[in-house]
Amino acid sequence: MMTMVAVVFVLAYSMIALEHPIKINKSATALMAAGLMWTLYSFASPLGVEGVTHQLTEKLAETAAIVFFLICAMTIVELTDAHGGFDVITERIKATKLTGMLWIIGFITFYLSSILDNMTTTIVMVALMKRLLKEHKQRLFFAGIIVIAANAGGAWSPIGDVTTTMLWIGGQVTTLQIMKTTWIASMVNLLVPLVIASFILKGDVVPPDKTENGASTTSQLEKNMMFFMGMGALIFVPIFKAITHLPPYLGILLALGVLWFAGNILHRNKPDEEKDHLRLTKALKRIDMASVVFFIGILLAVATLSANGMLPALAQWLDAKLGNQSIIVIIIGLVSAIVDNIPLVAASMGMYPLSQYPPDSFLWEFMAYCAGTGGSILIIGSASGVAAMGLEKIEFFWYARRIGPLALAGYFAGIAAYIIQYNLLH
Image 1 (cartoon, rainbow, N blue to C red):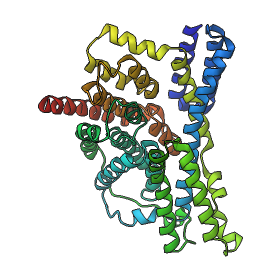
Image 2 (cartoon, rainbow, N blue to C red):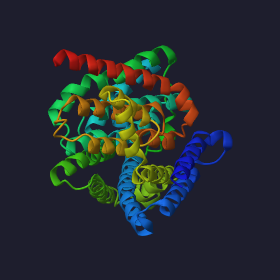
Image 3 (cartoon, helix red, strand yellow):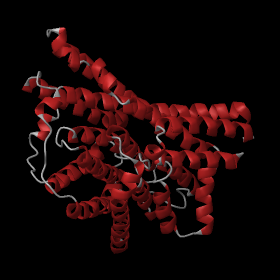
């Protein structure tokens, strides 16, 4: 029966990858996979139905926390966009060539991701690109680079990527040390794809028509206010978590409430027809709920592999067969392009005790880099990739063909950079 669980996952993964040729929505596939995998697991688990239900409740809580965060972040971005808030940035980006804009967007995403998390940064930057580029095909390519840059930027920051945050909270890495030791590798991970892409991407920047933005009714003061409040709301979340130690979704729910309250006050004297598209309720309607549903399905499906012990067993098998820490961590990074890197890192944290591998040792720092950036190789290998996939309707095989090789080149270049740096400093 456990074999059937794995078979269902592989089939579902294949159907998601072939979404456009077979014309079956990936959200439907993900939901069916989650339901079938948990049902089959309940039949075979020695824990019984009650034990599996308890596990499912725990995994659902983890999934809901991510989904709540995603919905709130997407709403904040939509509300900021409705007010024309992103004009604050787009008006200052003067690049006329696509290659020039590529580098600007790459670096903005890289550093923004280290302050926010990589998924939120991807949502913000993909929304920003809609105000900078008219051609959808060009935006697709930029969205792929944004995924690489967001994951690279999140890997070297304790609050930038979930896996690095897990290692940070668990005591495996410390703040300043992880930033010092993985920044170069993460930067190389970004620079290599940017250099290669500069030879591929040609042409001039064609901005969208101003009428497409739909924000002409807002004043400059309102644009500035909503932009800085929107970005401030997102930046507030990691600060809230650091101070209160409460889950990030609670912080972003609070921030969204404040933004909603401020918007009501800001537009309270306007006629209804003028402020209708500026309301937060309107922003909620513009969210791509199909992508949110896909997120729920794929996270619950992968959670089954963690709950039934398949992913921890995979980590232990790698340890027994290979033995070499560097190779194991590199493989964990590559596997994270297929399945969620969170349970892989969690399993590794359980396999290697701190008494044997102290904080800031090679294993933990290298894992932070590999697990954080390996997910860029495939579009559904990271939360930022899944978010971009939903926002810009990116095809699995298009990403694998056009962006995957760039991400793979950056991944191994960063690995070489980290190992060279480690050998020089130790």
